[in-house]
Image (cartoon, rainbow, N blue to C red; front, top):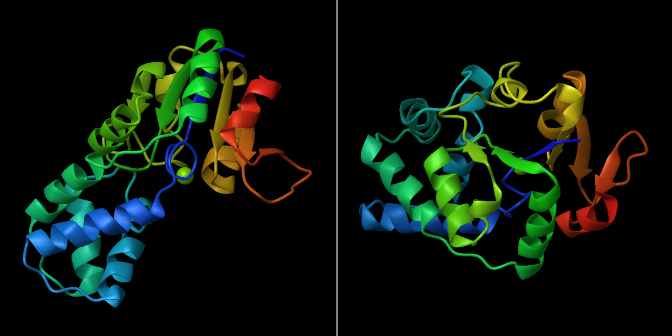
Length: 207
Ligand SMILES: [Mg+2]
């Protein structure tokens, strides 16, 4: 094995709370009144564009948000959201140690279904960006599980030299395996079909 390709949200960084707080701050800043229901609708529209488009763009994301909420939010909303999410800080010393260890043995990458700029900033804030050779968001790459999503990795490695790690059974486990890669599912569930871990810190004992 030569390369490990990590998912980001709910794999390297837990997603929910921070997204909601950033979202609320942006709406407040733009003087929009919001209810919990509206927040939920915006949250739900995040993953909608990946069902219809091969790639992410600010415009398509906004289109789904406006459609779902009946609002007419401007593109500035997306710009501000990307920025706000990128300004959130996290600490996880144990994860840092794990990535330090893994980066000495393997080339590490991130492939994520969100905006590259936000994701790189979040990794940077956490002090772990330097462990990755490259971070591919769905705006510069393709959504998982688009058949092209791992093509950028296969330019350098054979599929069986690559290990995918993530929390989505479909995107991070079944899809990479169908391409000939190895995969580890980050989950609290037990599933005898796949190798599973509850925490990334278990990787030090496996790899
Ligand atoms: Mg994920």
